[in-house]
Length: 159
Image 1: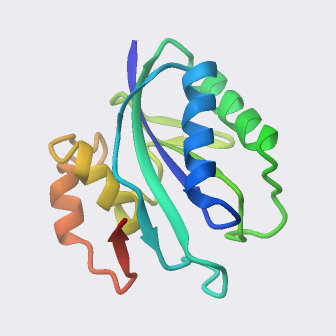
Image 2: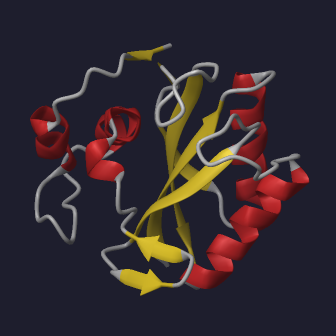
């Protein structure tokens, strides 16, 4: 079993409901959620004229191979009504693989650890809540260190 951290995000409709639905579907299709952070509200990032996001990090242990995990998560997004129309556009649900154990994966369409997580407070805040001592396998720093080092004007608050 491999420990996996996922980031859930939503900025349309019943955002809390969509996060809960995604976690439930992941629990059914992938593995039981072992740990979940609080939900954090964040100003829209990338495309700043969009509604605010809710984000949450979940941790689970799975036997699924990374590519199979990705395909399963994309299927959950589609099942929930996710449309990929505009980069950084609004979405019902977004599910990102942050870490797949300590593995380094660099394949077309699948890069793990997530290449931008150390630059995103909306990822580091919930991740730090449940795994402050986890060491980023590329940067060789704990999540708590990455969070404290990040200089960000983006407002992130725990709900």
